[in-house]
Image (cartoon, rainbow, N blue to C red; front, side, top):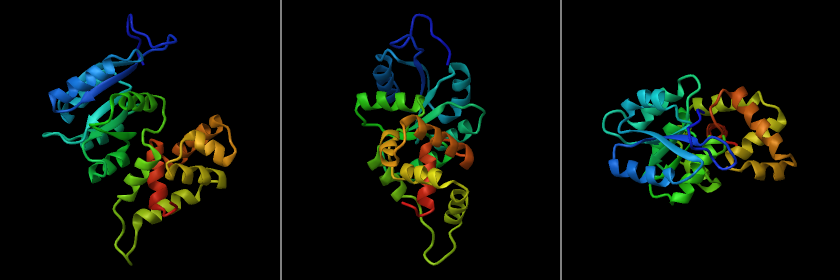
Length: 233
């Protein structure tokens, strides 16, 4: 994260750099006003279409990208997939007007860290950006359960390659790793997992990092989806 002259977060840290991607100029302006007034966040650029994202990211070097899912030329899903495939990509927060949109689920599978409804209160938007920048989940337990409940299921009575793959991946985990994975699938926070499994929060964070490495996933939301695919929640 590059320092910005004259702008530091409270405590001397560098502000979180945010890129806003939305085809609606009014939405971009509103988000810029919300985030621009917070000392520890800084809007470093805007883009009006997914096709503009690579150049915008290269120029602005954001930590977090707020990505509209529906854009006329290149949509947010394709842009997220391309961005997350790059080395050391920024985190992506999907912006949408629908909280149970199949496209949102596809974006999460592609590596987005979570999603925000466009009518989310400003304070919650700010907190979501902070959590993503810190590597935390951006979905509340209730929202996580809503999302994973809408994942497309297998044909009744037929083979389920997604479930078989999930079970195979999870079978390689230790018992403790599996417990943490299931807790993530239930939408539990680090603090809740620590309490339930009698761990410190630091230990939970270490287990989450280990899970992401072992399962070759980008974030805890993808772990939650994998656990749901396996039928464990």
